[in-house]
Image 1 (cartoon, rainbow, N blue to C red):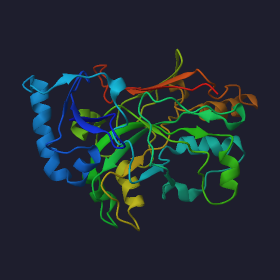
Image 2: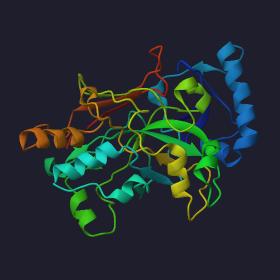
Image 3: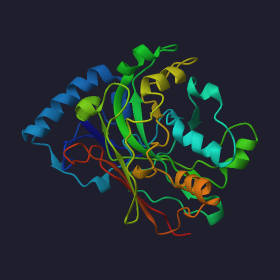
Length: 325
């Protein structure tokens, strides 16, 4: 089942979307918004699946042709956005580039930050302009959306709380982040709003590519006409999503609609490219002594998409252009 939100008000209007992303049905009789469905997920999911089955069979007379450009983020605002850093290769590169070692505790205790989620950009919303010194960067990630997760949920029990998955462009301003981190209190201004894919999907939409912890498909990232990277999301992910959920729920209950990110998808196999600019710049620094690839500039376009093994788009594409200054 695939779910999206038409642009309407603050929280969008929930629609069930066909597997090929070409048709949709509004479901005001089930839930007006995705958040409302998540708040009563067990009951709403059954009814939404019935709608999805009718939509796929062509038996839903309410269905309409869908242009994914009309979609906001599936959750235009979320109660909570927690971003992990599950691909330790990415973290190792960052530290090696500045001559530091990876602390051993990061292999057993996930890195995670709490980001802003009162505004989540839609898949076609422009990226805000930034001066070159701010270092505007994309970060291609996978994220899960949970139902209510009790405090203290163990990793062995956490997979059942994954109700939806989507893609994220976790936008970063690399020039601002170091000074913020140096203050010892995390970052804020270095993290403008993130963008989500057109739809969020239930785990069964991924078939055997979802093993309950990781998505085993490449995540394609284009910068303009260049294929910037296509790392395999299921490889080199040190912490699976159940471990990330358990970490987040260690001392708190997670409310329905909590969005948890994987961190930048990153492989040790360099031939697969990178899912963010700063990783390529770190590799260039290690190889050449200095970075060569510039950060994003006004007018540039970024596309983030995941295709299934038959070449079909799973979540639709995040396709954003940097707005003029």
